Length: 260
Image 1: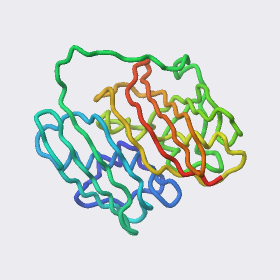
Image 2: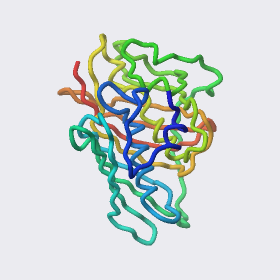
Image 3: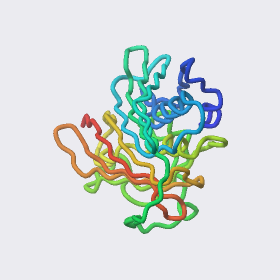
């Protein structure tokens, strides 16, 4: 089973990739690894230094099965901000489309951070939860160590659909910290899955996020997903990530298709 470090060290965006089964989610690719590969392809297509990744919008369009091809495109490069798009092709057609925003740091007098981190202990205070051993768990979950710190459990009939879990990669040695965080940040099931009372399909439709720390540090990160609205077979969820020191490093939103 190739770790994130092993997968990315051998990834040649110009040649495409047959994604190992251990990074898959049913018949498609795990969204976090698909996004991380797309970002890596965008960075590799540029010569010289790239500004840090600041934001992304990812549309999961079709099954990411078979050989994956990556087509990065520069949309505009300004003085501070560089916009790129990446189309990810698969055997059945377009699998995903990424809109990426890279931005150089600028001096600013505006600095603030609203601290809404849940009051939980550090990762050492919680026990491991073997998500990969659950009968409904997709294969990719075996690439992560997870320690629930609050919220609800999947398929528990929860009325408050929230997941709160410390997560780290099995191995992300040598991987760009921002890319490693993206590959991890979608590792939890959609929060609406906690409201299920029996296994049923659930699938991410899109994912938008902002990186608040362009070079996040550490191994353990606290992931929170909260389904704020669910109706008509769709859920809208809020997603946040903090490092082990309590600093917010990512915020995002996701639309999810619910088949229950």
